[in-house]
Length: 157
Image 1: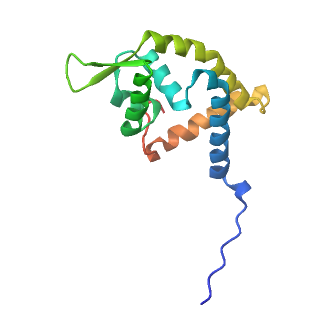
Image 2: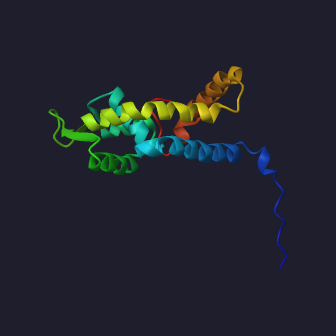
Image 3: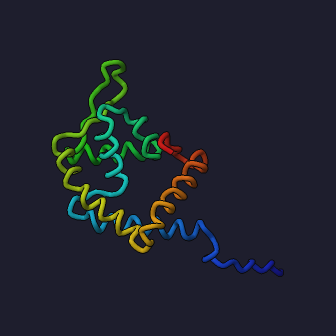
């Protein structure tokens, strides 16, 4: 039995390969900077989005940060167990839980912001300052144009 030889493809020429690697690096840098605060990138995004829109419901939060609702449920469970967020029944629909930061959540978020900003700087540090804005613009363009291809499209895209 003969098999067809696989084509030789240079991984370095594939944007998806570099995007995957950059994601790995971004998560590693974020975790290094925020280790004292014990926050992952997704937990930070959830806390910040709740701080930005107190009283948001879980489904809206999932759409805001581009996460599927079941995954976000686990994230909120962990944040609630740490006393960082509170779930309160909606006065309009008792099945809907509205999210707010607890005092501890607000304090932790305020303490974590400088580390989060350092992580962002470290991620972009290899680029000359004049190229950073263009790089972010291109990233936003790719995310927005491909948002509907995501398992969890974001309303923010």
